[in-house]
Image (cartoon, rainbow, N blue to C red; front, top):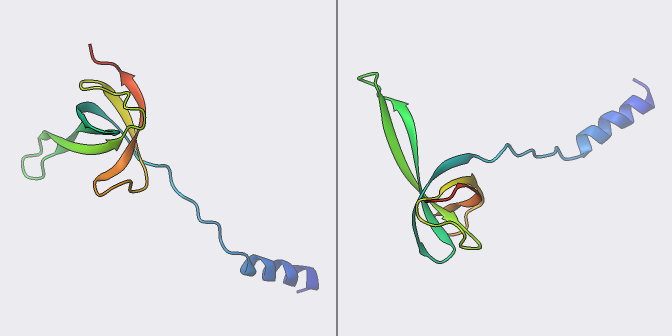
Amino acid sequence: MDSQELNELIDSVAKPKEKRRGLPKTREGVVVSDKMEKTLVVSTVRLMKHPAFKKYVRVTKKFHVHDEQNEAKIGDRVQIVETRPLSKTKRWRLSKIVQKAV
């Protein structure tokens, strides 16, 4: 091993490895409440196969979502993105409004 290879090996060990983050999770759902200041409650629906009966069942989950401009209203279809914890229950933020309510 020559000195150049040895130096490259030392450099690669000395440098801390880059931490790579994966893509944040995204969900699409309907706004069911906008009564809080800068916060929405978004309901999402997904299909899950029942373990015993092998039929697909609708599973609903509610997320508390941060909406900085208070732009989404009840009934809007929105896209949300996972983010750092913003409060005790908020871990998602509003990405975009897909469809406005009629």
